[in-house]
Image (cartoon, rainbow, N blue to C red; front, side, top):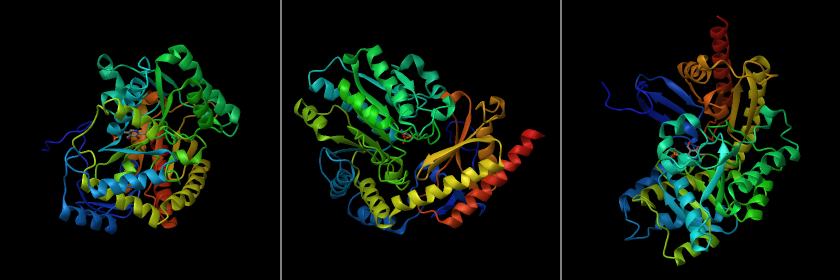
Length: 440
Ligand code: PLP
């Protein structure tokens, strides 16, 4: 009997080893990690340079409390992130995960408003669907009903605008009119709430688990930036999933001329070696907060030297192996191969993504975009079939988290063409078996 529990009771095989893009369970079965865990292990498993950097740090010190010491590791990683972030975003606050990073950004936005005489501003507008984390603050901006509904009495729900799902609404995502159409919903929401009450807007540059690699339509991010400026509200980019090279640039925000005021990262920064996250903020926001008495927020493990040494080595691997360029190149190829699968398998209704953040959505009818019947639990079934065949992919309900099914295909950024062949073969076989099951 296991004493563990997570979201459910289901028992998984016990992990034994992981190297590069492969993982092995205790029975010796090999899996190709086609989702980098949960879009985490961007540089692949067991990278020797990261392990060596961790070993070196462990031999020096594993903990130094932030109120007692700075550490070389945290200073160096902060400088590295400040250099990689857009100009002006050069203040770094370390945390241990994505939800903590989002919480930090929400609080910094609020404290900045307090510190600058705008104390009536506290609301943070977000999108539906979206995922920003599971702690209560992050959940308040998360647009994913199954996760928030049980906690409704404990939450202060924040206003939501629809995510820009042009493919569902019959709009052309390449037409800037589509981007403007969805971005203008932010202006309407700010007006409806009262601009003097709104502190920030939080957005995943490319949608993650909630929308399944949703790339914003042309013109969207730039118009969002314009609207934030017009109303004096902060733009927070949730790059927990898109950061650390996943979309083919170091940050997802790098794809657009729409510089955020705050960026939060996690997953690919620690890359599965350590729990690590970071908030990177414009000094213009941080200085008034520090002048007004300090940032009223913090975690015991913030800036942990082992975590920062690992994070620094991870970023050096991303740079040294030119993994952003590889994600860009292999992502194009993966999207083309997924479109090939769409021609063969009618159940695929849409293929989308950027870099190696790619997904396909299952539908019962491509023209009407009707989802598969909810009872099929297609998102889970397809993942289970692929898992049995030794391919790990990641799935979620889409469409506000209640219906619809998408599968995220997000291998480590070190993938080669041979790995892509293996992923596509595994998905092809899984989709055929799934089609047989629903036909029979
Ligand atoms: N924000 C985004 C965009 C995410 O994808 C996630 C996790 O999936 C989070 C926040 C929360 O991160 P964590 O699970 O590390 O708390």
